[in-house]
Amino acid sequence: MLRRRSNGFSLVELMVALATLGLVATLALRTFTNQHRTYVVIDDVSEVQQSTRAISSLLERDIRNAGYMVPPAAAACGVDRNDGPDTIFLSDSDAILPCCSPPEPAGQALDRSLSAVRMAAESTTSPNTGVATLSLDETVLDGNATYDTDGDGANDSDFQLGGGAILVDLANPGRGVACGFVTAVPSTASITIDFVAALDNGSGFSSAPELRLVPAHGYRIVEMGGVPRLERDGILISRGVEDLQFAWYYDDDRDGQVDDPGETRGVPGTAYQPQAVDGSDLREIRFNVVSRTAGVDPTNPVAAGTGQRTENRDTAVSSPDGFRRRIQTTTVRLRNVSL
Image 1 (cartoon, rainbow, N blue to C red):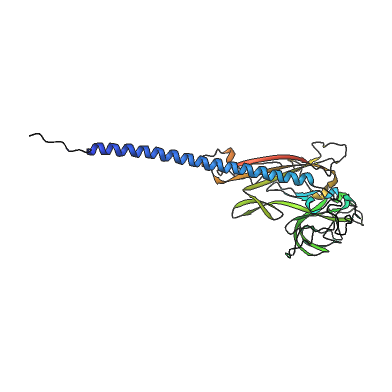
Image 2 (tube, helix red, strand yellow; image 1 turned 180 degrees about the vertical axis):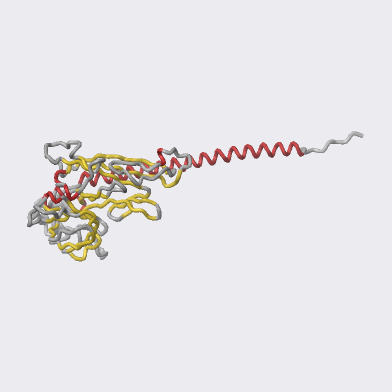
């Protein structure tokens, strides 16, 4: 009698099928992993590029408007570093209203006893670097306060906590500019500032200074938890911004053009020193924003994974670390100073 063969797979057939299935699954998983990694990198790079463009747009706006309704010498001030990010202060055009808009409640135009080129608070103190409290004639420059410094819900000052301030001596423009971050506004006639740059206090200047203080936007990079972040007026703008470098263009001889070399500062061989320049001769500012991705790309080429050196920065640039980076470089003319 013939036996009927049982249905099913042999052990060899089963082993071959499992091996084939394992190979297909491995290839599919590897493909999925590579695609996911690529997606994450592209998403990170796209976010960095958008963030860098937004930062550059904001910086460009503030630089272009710097000097509006304030002494031209007080348009900008900064700290130039070759071993770390630069710091910059740009006069706060948002805090100063143009004439007659809006009018006073009684229908009167805003008080313009100070001319447009001198709209600033008068000070009697010429501080060094560090924390100092200045006596002012007023902390509201145009009769309409812009910021609430005591948290009562009503605006009381044109200087904001965490923001910046720029100090100039109108009688002695050769003293340069001083600047710092506002730490307190104790009253309508005083302000406390942590100065990061001071006026030149050397000999040869007039003994009757005309000190003026103007509100400013302050940009700086701080590191928190190992992650660099860009702050404007003490408020987080973007994480992952690891460097901010500036070059400053002056028309020292006032011949209508910037002569290079000689009138460009913050570049290799010529540092920017705020206490050694007449700020009213400033014509253009070039800025460089270096941003990095939130995550590391293990396949990142060495060149793109290294901190980028810009302007006169020559030290403390990170070694290859896998982060992808983008640089935005823009040159902006100060339209309120260079007219």
